[in-house]
Length: 141
Image (cartoon, rainbow, N blue to C red; front, top):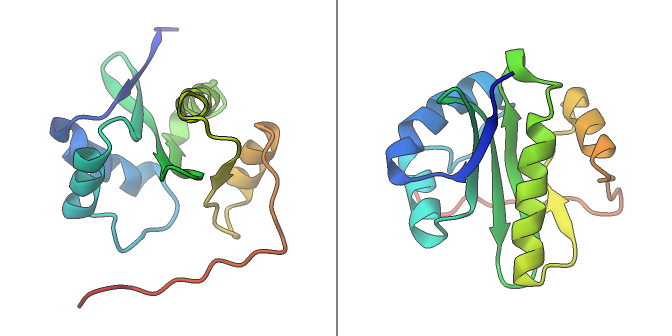
C-alpha cells in the first residue's frame, strides 16, 4: 500500500477539502464554506490537517487550539479508505500538535447519530461526556 502523507492544508487545497467533506463527512456546519475554511487556514495555517495517498485526499481533521483547549472537528476519512489507519494517523498528528502547545485534553465534536464515528473515537481513547450539552447560536445574517 502506498505511503500515507500527513500535512497541513494550504489555501490551494480548500475547494478539494470542501468537495471531500460532501463525500466523507457527516453533517454540515454554518462555517463549512469557502469563506469559513479560508479564515481558519489564514488564522491558523496548521489547524486543518490532511491525509493523502498517491496524491489523493483520503482524510482530514481540524485540530484547533485556542490557547486553552484542544478542539477536534471534521475527522473524516473517505468511505472506501476507512479501517486503514488513516483516522488514527490524523488523530496522532492532531494530538502531537496539541502537546507541542501544552494542551492537556482534546475534545471532539461528534454527531449523536454517527454510530460509526462513536466506535472510531472510542477506539482512539475518547469517551462521551454525557453531563455536557452543546449550545449554539448562529451569528450574523
